[in-house]
Image (cartoon, rainbow, N blue to C red; front, side):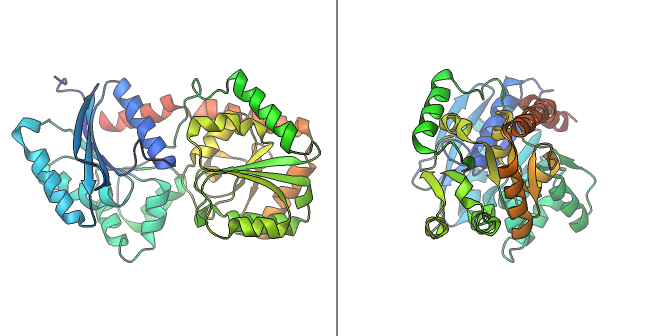
Length: 376
């Protein structure tokens, strides 16, 4: 039995293991850390109808895989019947909508029907995309207006919400990273050094770009900025992730040295990050990318646009090189400054990044801030 005083949370999400991507990683990390700290979390993971409905009991919670087709209304009615079953009753203290279309669509209604306070946890993808979508804006604002607490991962999100609706409890809680686990093994460092020696000219600086490189990530703009800088011949781009059509053709036309690997699971990247002299995050708009925390925790400087979590965390010339999103001249100048920087300067920037993570962006900070909300 769960103590009556302990938070008991019904958590709705589309993004959780075995899904890939930053939102799934964040959801997995937050839930595991909260369960380890004693919170009970009943997870409802919306997945495609290729998956069967499956209920698994885990320590301090359960994991319900819930298949959904195009008819979201039908899915939520089935879920309501499932949650109403007397043999599946918990005294939930909160319901969480963790980003994405389905959680924000249905959680406010479930919240009212069961009389459970709603906590809306916004990520980068859902808020930015839904805000300017005629089809999705209304249910996004409805969810926010009916939330007891709104959690954002960037200060910019918080400021925008404050201008859009009247709400007295909007909390800025950035992502965190598990520093004790995010350490390359000796074998990974050796593999990194060997690969770099075999594939990259020693007189070139390496910029890494990692993740799902959707249009919002600004890779097309970043490549154009490299061309504008006129120093592409001094760079090597190491790209790991899913790229959209036409991006590689653009790289070939630029005649820059590069390597593209398929999308890799997070811990596989520990053999690739050490190859980089800097990591680039040239997003037009963004939340709090895990890549930002992963690179900084490994003492790697960042070349980034001043949006989202990068704007919140990083200081130009202290942690890396920042530019205005979509501004080719500003970005090209940042790339030139990076190329002109000696090893000592880049090492100092990398150490500053690591100090920043230790001070402000650990998983303990992240989970403790969420616990304050649930125990309020």
